[in-house]
Length: 103
Image (cartoon, rainbow, N blue to C red):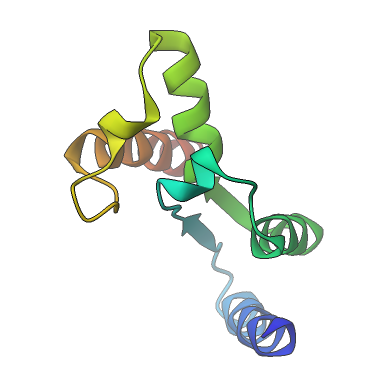
């Protein structure tokens, strides 16, 4: 899994460099990532993207920070299927547009 992920990201970086483009990757999490221990994938992906200087919009960091600032429960950010809902997408999209506009 790590090798395949690395291959794809490295290939995307190579192509983006060819056309002088920046890469922005948004990672999403499930509700269980906030209530259980994060999987090895979380740290691996986060560190890999950082080491490759890829712009990373980390939904976990965003939602964790917003929940603390607004004293909200993580469950408010997820639908009954445990995926992100419109509330969390709004917070994540705001961060994306702030990052994009700063580029």
